[in-house]
Length: 333
Image (cartoon, rainbow, N blue to C red):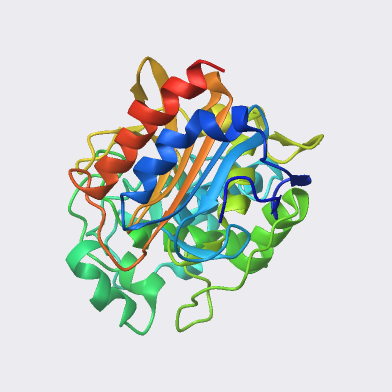
């Protein structure tokens, strides 16, 4: 797809033309670099609320849903903030045993009821991980929530990050429990409707709960809108989608990832490059949602979801694409 093609931006406010050489040429080097990465499917660059360059180099078109893998965690964290804004959850210090005691299995360790919403958001629940080598057994179990909650405590809750999709699946189950609505309904009401984006149904567990923290599908252009909500302090197109206080809390470091070395807030990895603060959601294979508020920048990358993207490999390539090629042009705007 040519950069000069008119793009119907599902997830943005209008049809935006990109014929001006001043627009497309600015980021030509970024797209040359992107083409050399055979794992990369699409790249979208928005600055100050306008998509200035976008191309689907491989894979689905920009307005077609793509598996965003663990960027789903960023979405579920956002839905948690919306639930807190609405009073469905009293706050991040609320405890699992008070909010959703029915979810806790009889064989859970004594510390499980004291796990807080903040512990789940930051993946500091202390329970043995369900990700990595444990993921297959976990999703093969008869009850994913019970399985995650009955695992041994390997750390004190709140003490350190143990990357685990199970924590986010528990969080999604809590959201469904306290609202009486499915995670899909909450996503469509909280983000789909105010942002005008399509949110298709995705994987469910044996009890019918939508998987929290993985396997959601959103178009690259829908992801841009979600990024824009955080860049705009929770507002989109005149609607306050989520409170400014949640944006601040979500983008404040709470813990640190052992794997990437980056800080982590509520659903967002956090670091600095070229002097700019960066918040990003990351999914397996190289699904990336970058937000740099001080440059008015939102960048989305989708990639082959079947191939790994390690921090020292392809994911590192994407960070270099951002810092070494995209940012110098964005700074000059």
